[in-house]
Image 1: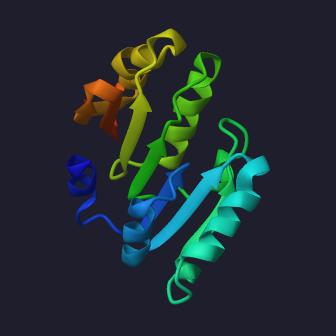
Image 2: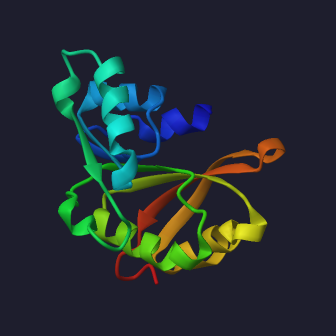
Length: 162
């Protein structure tokens, strides 16, 4: 996804990543500190992946933390330059706590990239087309219609944007 990498150029101090330990993670680690978050029950696997795949020279830049939307997001730093969310929009009944968590973790300078499989039956399209736009500015930066996947660049609305 070419658009994915170009969005991140120049943004490297602290990043929060959810469910994405791919090449992007390693590129970001070369730039600065990275916090990987997920539900507590899968942290052991993420820690193992980091230990086995991140060079020792930069492993100190990575941190693995539990994040349960709407519950403990106040324990994660809010000075994030980039938040990457991969396939995080999937439970309609949790959309409000996902939005609450994203609002807490971001500031006016944070760029949030959300990659979603556009599952209409799960309400994902409604989330992107209506719900998130109540609190954030959104721009689709990449689409793979054959796979029903979109990548949206999202920024927090500031007074005057509403």
